[in-house]
Length: 351
Ligand code: NAD
Ligand code: TYD
Image 1 (cartoon, helix red, strand yellow):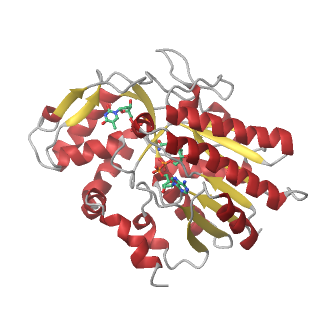
Image 2 (tube, rainbow, N blue to C red; image 1 turned 30 degrees about the horizontal axis):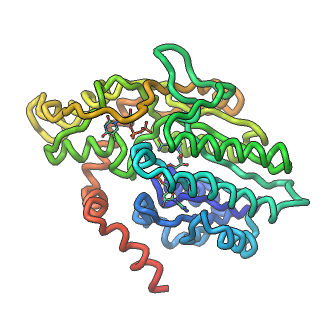
Image 3 (cartoon, rainbow, N blue to C red; image 1 turned 180 degrees about the horizontal axis):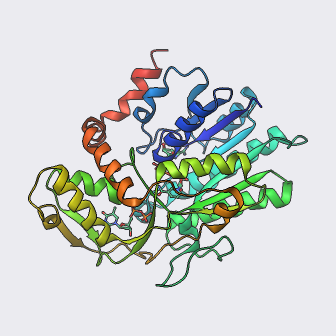
C-alpha cells in the first residue's frame, strides 16, 4: 500500500537510521523527515538520501502546533514514527524545560494533529511513539524490565518520556487513536552525538583526552546496536498491534567501566598504541545526580510475537562502531567545531 509516513527527529542518531531504512526499503512510500535541527540534529547523517525521490525533509518544531497541523493538511499522512525528543539525561538535569516542552507538549501536538486528520478514518493509520526503558526507573542487581513494570522515572528526561508515553496511551483509550509504543534500551553505533558515553569515549581516547567515568563506573546499561533498533521499529510499525507496548533490548548488560575497558583495548589495537595506553585515560569524576543504577530489558514479547532479535553480537558491533568513528573523522570534527549546523543552509536554502 502507498503510505505517507512522517518520521520526527529523523536528523538525529536513531531517527537517521530509521529514515534511511524506510526510504530505501519502501520506495513506494513517501517518507517525510520532520526535524527542528537542534544541536542534536545533523542532516549530514542523511546526505546519501538527498536525491531520493520518495524523501522530503522539513525543518519544523514539534512544539509549534500550527506548523504540525499544517503539515497534516498538506500531506496525506498515514503513519507517524515519532522519535523527535530531547534525549540526553545530563542536559535534562541542567535545563529541564526543553524536555518538558519538546517531549511532552511536542508529543501532544502530534497526537492532536493526527487525531484531527484521521478522525472518522483510523483504518490503515498508525501513530508509533518511540520511547525508552528509562521510564521504568532503576533496577537493583536482579530482575528485568517487562512491559508491565510500573513506571518510576527518576530524571527529568525519563519523567518527560514517561509523561509522553502516558499521553499516547490516553489517546488510544480515549479517542481510539491507533497507537503503538516501544521502550528501548541504550543504543550505540554510527552517527551518535558525542555527548553520549560511547562516541564521547572514542573521541576522547583518539585525542588522548581523559575518559570521564561517573561515580565508580558500576552503573549497568543494556546496549543495542542502532541498526537493530531501526529493524525493530520497522517491524513494530508494520506488524505491531494497536494499543500494545513492546520492550526492545540487546540482552547485553555491561557496567560502564567494563565497557570502557573493552573500548580501550579496541582503540589501542586500532591506533597501534601499546596496550594500556587508552585505559590510562580513565578518570573517575563526580557522579550524575540521581544516577540510575541498572537498566535491563526483557525483550521476550517482541521476540516471541513479532520474531525480532538483535543481529549483532556486542564485540562485533563495537568494532564496527569504532571503525566508523575512526573512518569518519570529518563527521566528528564538524560536530566539535559546530560546522555541521551550516549544512541545512547550504543544502536547502539554495532551493
Ligand atoms: P537525538 O538527540 O540524537 O536526536 C533527536 C532529534 O530530535 C534531533 O535530530 C533533534 O534535532 C530533534 N528534535 C529535538 N527537539 C525537537 C523539536 N522540538 N522539534 C523537532 N525536532 C526536534 O536522539 P536519539 O538518541 O536519536 O533518540 C531518538 C528517540 O529515541 C528519542 O525519542 C529517545 O527518547 C528515544 N530513545 C533513545 C535511546 C538512545 O539510546 N539514544 C534509547 C531508547 C529510546
Ligand atoms: P549516556 O550515554 O548518557 O546514556 P543514559 O544516561 O541515557 O544511559 O550514559 C550511559 C552511562 O554512562 C550512564 O550510566 C552514565 C555514564 N556516563 C559516564 O560515566 N561518563 C560520561 O561522560 C557519560 C556521557 C555517561
